[in-house]
Image 1: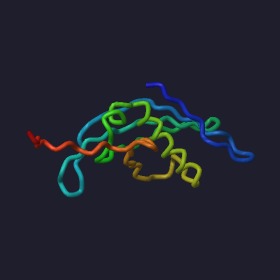
Image 2: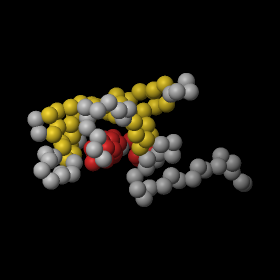
Image 3: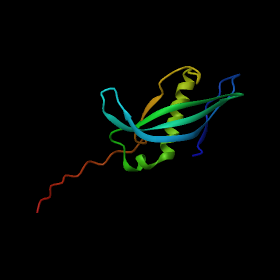
Image 4: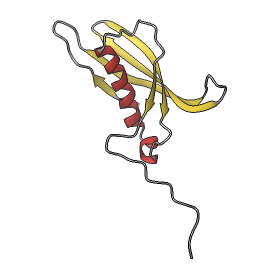
Length: 121
């Protein structure tokens, strides 16, 4: 995967660059003992000469559409957008933090209602 994104630029600060370096889809044990599918995304970050690698665990929302579930580019961009938001709030990649995001459906997308298995004759 080779998705690259540039974050916003502050006056007098270097611009952050980020790219997806890999992803691992798996089932992850939750606090209640259950297992939930998700993806660990490895993201490379660069600001000037400083480089970092962080891991973001992404879960898909329960109502995710089949299209969004299959769209790895959308998921990768959502993960990078999440990191961009954190950076804009002042977070630095060398600060320890659990990086977890739940990916929702794209804006303007709705889940179609489930069809009943019953049929009237």
